[in-house]
Amino acid sequence: MQTIFVKKIKNTIIIGDDLQASNLDYYTANKFLTQLQKGLKNGYKNFIVNFRNIQSFYPNGSAYLAGILDHYKNQDIEFLIECHSCAAMQISPSISIEGREQEIAKILNKVWRVNSSDDVHNYTNAVIKALSQEAKFKENFLQSLEWAINELMDNVIRHSGVGFGYAMTQIHKKNKKLAFCVFDAGIGIYNSLKNSPIAPKNPYIALEKSIQEGITRDKNIGQGNGMFGTNQIIQNNQSSLFIAANGASYFWNKGKINKPNKKMAVLSDELGTTTVDFQLDYSKDISLREILNLGGKKYQFINHRIENMENDEGVIEYKITAQGRGQATRVAGAALRTEVLNLIYSSGKTIQIDFDGVSVVSSSFIDEFIGKLLIEIGFASFGKLVTLKNMNETVESILNRSVVQRMIENFNQK
Picture 1 (spheres, rainbow, N blue to C red):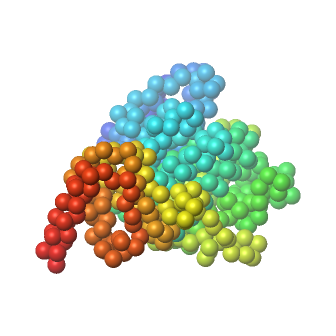
Picture 2 (cartoon, rainbow, N blue to C red):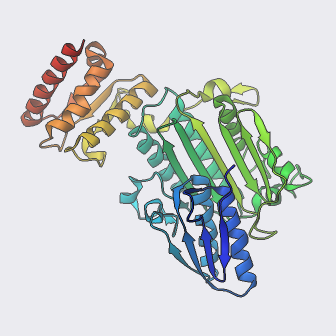
Picture 3 (cartoon, rainbow, N blue to C red):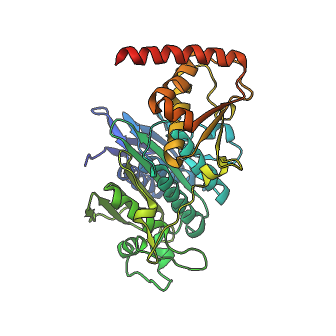
């Protein structure tokens, strides 16, 4: 594990160094909290936070750090952030979803403050849509991911004691990894469970208990399936799960459990904070129906996102103008094609692509979207699975020319 340089000089906290490019992860952000608390004890109320040579902001460091900064800002502690790349990641300040509908389209690689159950719903839907335009996933992967994100963030709303948290999702296409983290500056898992019938003896045991089936402080509030189900998903996918709360941490990685000896910094005994971070390999499929047994019964999953897109005949309606990508570039066309493919693979249903409100498209857009879609799924399957609706003569003419050229090119390559 890389050791990241974190140093405090009076009221300046430096993260990273000049000698090598570094990444912001949970352990680095936790070192920041240690240095920050030292500065607070010395009487400082204003801090300069210098991200020196940090090249990548991972979810487990960014969500954690955003929550820590937000917590202390609410106590009138001021921070001056010196960082060239932080603006893109938007780790400071964190963003509430409420009233930011336009920005939700760019949901990935940013920390979002999630304040309510409605925020959880909006965040999860936006993440699944954004991911479905970024890469092709196996049949059940996005459904399982949606379930896990919903459950983990619902835990924050219900059990953290503060009612809000900070979430970040990231896709790493090079190694086909999907990373998600949720952080809250609340009471922590141990404090949540210690007065319940579970009554764990220490914070580490509380973390171990939290991933067991049916563990919850109050059955009237939750059934204790979120952490358990997420752990089942991680183990089936042979990926990694990291949990930290009340100074303890738990790390499961491809069958191995790591229990660090060093105690993690926390806000206080009362505010033990909770971080849940996982990575998934999206080159593998995940099926909740196959791996998740709740009370000895197979889980029955309903894909609400796809269900909400279906019309009365069970056909998925996909409206071009609602996708927020425009109809001018190959990038936009590729994103829509990828999303349509994910919808087809996930549902096996017919999809109706609606061009209502589209007066003109670029040849590049329509070729990348429809032309390549036809080639990828095949002419016969395209006729069975895809219908085109409300296309005017101009768009139809551009499409016909593009498809003919694409088919000729594909034929000549064989």
